[in-house]
Length: 120
Ligand code: SF4
Ligand code: SF4
Picture 1: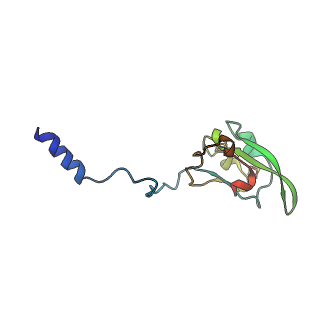
Picture 2 (picture 1 turned 45 degrees about the horizontal axis):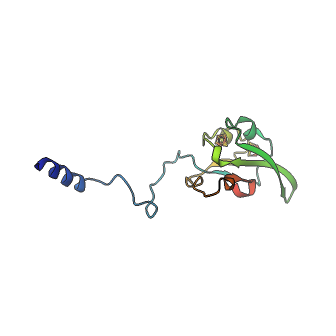
Picture 3 (picture 1 turned 90 degrees about the horizontal axis):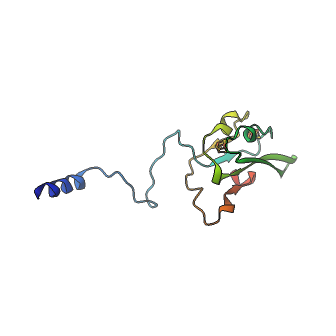
């Protein structure tokens, strides 16, 4: 009978393993792969990211920039594996994976299709 009490006291005195989400946030490792980010200024519209994506999540779409109409990646985040292959093959390294991990928390799945402007 005394053993459960001892175990409970030990647990109360030990370090906490969870955080009070969403008020508290865990710090993420440098290697964490979250939401994709695109630097529209340096994208060269080569479509290498679209070709390598294993889940066919990337579609090149037209956007109007200061230098005219260019094709840039649009990402369907609902199907993204966060594998980072697209970022690895991107020649100017303008496509990266950030630290945002709450991107898939939406009421409407259609909002998970992110146009290039929304990835900036
Ligand atoms: S991280 Fe992987 S799955 Fe997601 S868009 Fe890039 S290549 Fe596709
Ligand atoms: S994001 Fe990178 S790989 Fe994709 S089209 Fe632009 S330059 Fe090419």
